Amino acid sequence: MEKINIIYVVLALLVLGGGVLLFFGEQMFLPTGYFTLLDLAPQDFTFAEPVGEFTVIEARLALEHTAEEIQEMKDLNLSTGFMLDALGEAQAAYLEEDYLQVAKLTQLVSYVRGEKLEFLDRKKLLQEKLRVAEKEGVKTTQSTVLVGNAIREFSSERFDQANELLAQAS
Image (cartoon, rainbow, N blue to C red; front, side, top):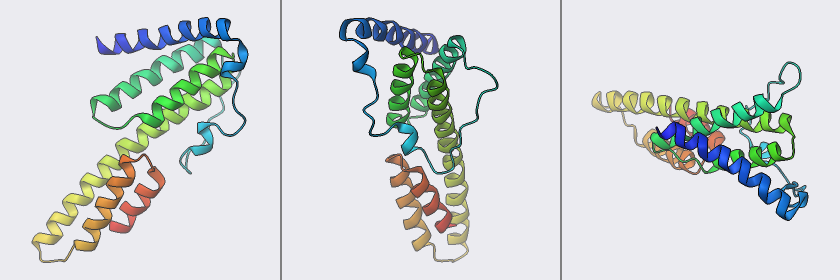
């Protein structure tokens, strides 16, 4: 039921955004020229060019899928600020009929979702490894501090730094 609601919210935002565009004019959604969230993407993110033209239907489906991915992260009590910002930027690109930008931003959200899930798995495995080492009498204080710092970076959505700290802790 919640998935349906979030899809309706995305569609409503698209419709509402169109009305706002008509009321305020095109300039409201034009990029500032400073940066896009793609500029803030994790270092390993690469955009997979769609084969052929990315159509309005594909863009709409991508936005709906992205909303579902964000809801999944919310259901796991994970931060979604960056993902929501990317979705908002993708919706603005949709209104501007820049469907390639929609593709890029929705792929970014999917990538971030995967990074979050992978980080959580790696963190859990490392914490278990540290517990076993500690039981065997190995000092794990430095690694435990690094894991704590990685979690803090992860919570602030600084994924590259979080992954680097987690790697140092292992």
